[in-house]
Image (cartoon, rainbow, N blue to C red; front, side):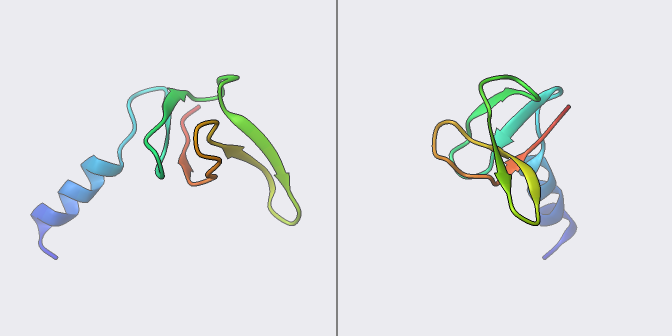
Length: 62
């Protein structure tokens, strides 16, 4: 993997300022917005959940 590939991955994974994004379906909403679900997971605590697909694989911004 070259520098160009690493940079491309970083850009792909970036989040718009103040936005949180689901890595599964691409749903975006402001970080901390009521649009996001919140679930309690034993041993992990509170997690953000995508309202569109239910994934907890979310890049968060606050």
